[in-house]
Image (cartoon, rainbow, N blue to C red; front, side, top):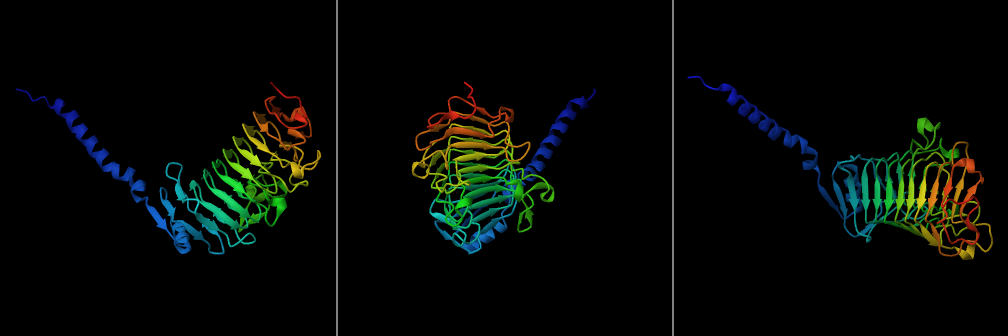
Amino acid sequence: MHLRLPVLRPLVALGAVAALVTAAAPAANAATARAQVVRVATSAQLVAALAHARPGDVVSLADGTYDTHRGFTASRNGTAREPITLKGSRRAVVTGGGVSGHYGLWITGDHWRVVGLTVARADKGIVLDGSVGTVIDSVDVHDVGAEGIHFRSSSSDGVVRRSTVRRTGRVKAQFGEGVYVGSAHTNWRSKHKGVRFGEHGGHGPDRSDRVVVERNAFSDTTAEAVDVKEGTTGGVIRANTFRNTAYAGGQFADSWVDVKGNGWTVSGNRGTGPATACPTAAPCRDAFQVHSVLPGWGTGNLFAGNTVQGGVPGYVVAVEPADPALGTVVRCDDTGAAAGTSNLPCVP
């Protein structure tokens, strides 16, 4: 009689595999197991929660006002799979010590989710420096001294969506953008708390690339609702509404959206005014503008399906210089401005 030992070997192997899977499961889920919900109700608790946040953590704000007179910093890193979430209702208000104070929320870590809360009464609302993959969702940013939300220092692959941005530029009207993406080339060597805005120590562009601005409501911004700077590439501005944006007029506020980067898509947006600030073709003459302010930038942008519902005496899309070689495409379904679709021929 012979024992058929080979029959037993697969069973042993299967048992070994099962043991390995069982042993590996805790390691694979270790990060998830460490993640926690941290509930905060005071400014000191919020500072501590942000300073010790780990991937997968949820920092949940109780309703109330949070103010250290220095703003709040989110410097820890989440991951694409396990972002860190900071959330609250619109009645959870993060402040920066007043419109001449500090940033309301300064995000320097990667992969954050900021959801639902309010940022108000700050120098700038939310500023991202070197933050990759951060999503700002359903927040309310209002009553700030300068811009509402700024993606800066190569803060790439970020999103701001379903949010309201209003009453910006309370102190510095020329810097009162709703959402600001990148940095002007004259500021690439500038820095904030040691962080250079441009890459390679400020010798290269601020590559805040592939930022998505979608389904937001902008109102009463002294400068542009969305300002896209040279050095940025591949972003999207879609399905937003604009009311009384860029109302301060002047060279710093003559359109709802100003694009100086490359390869941006601007589609499905709509808005009105400000008619009272734009009685003639200048200032505040157009709804959307493209500028090439630096060789190689302001190229390859697409505008489609944007609607002006009143208050714009110029074009829906003005391209400056009006050079087809810049590769900007303006679809003929960009409609509603007094002067027509564009100073370039539109494309059906």
